[in-house]
Every structure is written in C-alpha cells, then in structure tokens.
Length: 280
Image (cartoon, rainbow, N blue to C red; front, side, top):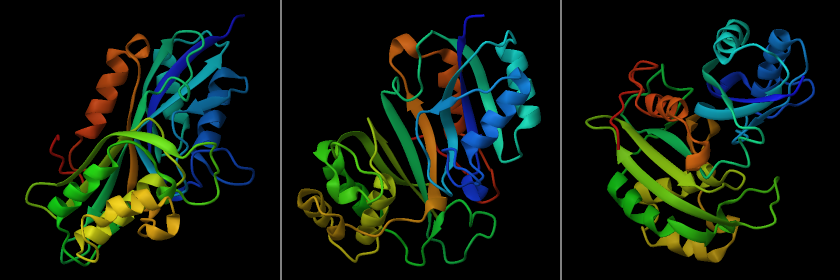
C-alpha cells in the first residue's frame, strides 16, 4: 500500500518534557506522539516537526508531518490520537497533504512568543509559563532596541554552544515587544526564517537588560556587530518560550492550518492570569 503524507498542528506544555526530539530513556514530545501513532496505525511512524523545541519550552502551534500506510481518515486519526496522547499534549488538527511535504523543509518562517511577567507579586498559576522579573520593564525602550535585529544579519552573538550550524546568518522578518493592555505581562515575539540554538532566549535576555535600564538601547546593535556570545545578555529561562506558529508557502498552506495557528495566538485565559491576549 502506498504511503500517504499527513500533517498536524499540536500544542504542548513543555514543563515535563526533555524537549521535542526523541531521546533514549527520556520523555519527549516526539516520543509520546510516535508512541500514540504506532498504537493507532499498528506501524512505526517517524514524525518531523517544524522546530525542535528545547527542554521546558512549550508550543501553541507546532507543525508536524508524517507518512503512513494507514487507511484511517484524518478525522479518525485526530480523535484516536487525542485519546492516546498524554494530558500535556493536544492534537489540534490533522489533514492529508501532498506527497513530499515535510514540516521542516517547507516552513518559510517560524514565530515564537516569549512571556515576561513584571508585576509586584508573582502569579503562582503562571510560574511555569513566564519569566518573573522584579523590575518593571520599559517595553517601549525594548521595542526600540529590538528593531536593529530585524533583517538579515549574522546572529553569532545570539547562539549558545551545543548545536553548531554551517552559517549563523538568519533573517528576522518581525520582532515585536508589547505589553498586554493594563497588565503585568510583556510579550516578545520573533519571526524568522530559522533560529540558532537558544537564539530567541538570548535575544530576550539582551532586551531585558535594556528594559531594566542596565543597558542603553544602542547596545543591542553593538552586540549584533560583535558576533560574540559573551557580549550579549543572559539566556532567558526556557519556561517563558512558546512556539507560536509556522508560515507556509501558498502552495502548501491550508485554511485549516492557518485557522489553527490564529486561534492559538488569540486564546483567552489559560491558565488564569496569563492569557489575556490582545492581537497585535
């Protein structure tokens, strides 16, 4: 029987996972998802995700593709997978796609959101999903400083050791810093054609140094030009980072995929005190 290509959008709470990628003896999102797929299809299935999130990092909209010889419809697979995956994973959509589609190779850009909390009291319900800061952030200065990172640059200063790449040049197509209206949450959203190891978390750590007044806004440009990780800010903690959405080329996009990403980006009040979202 010929193999079909399917893709899904999933969300997960990364707190109890050792990242996306399968690892022997460790609990990972890929491992749990492939275990459920094997139960449903009665065959081993290899999945491909658009981004390999690290330990503790969450996803509101992770795109995953896989091939299978199963005759089950996307609707049946959707229901069956959600009955089998653990409670910290949910499958949002499943659909058939063109042969040869791969979630890694066909992603034009990926968008991440980092959540900062700078209120006077910690929110016990959001502690797993944000970086708690005790200094009120100047989000406008952060937004001003961030603009130097938009465009095609060598982001060597924003890469941790551990995952070497042939090139450290990436194109950031959008970088926004905004405070949720009337609240204690600040979102940093970064969209790019690709990311280096810990790139978003180092960008956030660098912008926080500006937002707390430790560094001037112009310093971010100096860090970029230095191409030296030691010149940048700290690596922000993993728990505040969410994979938000994936942008696909028109020939591979679909209304179902797009709607799933949009719904996740605008979801309200989960968990209490954290998701009071205002669309950008």
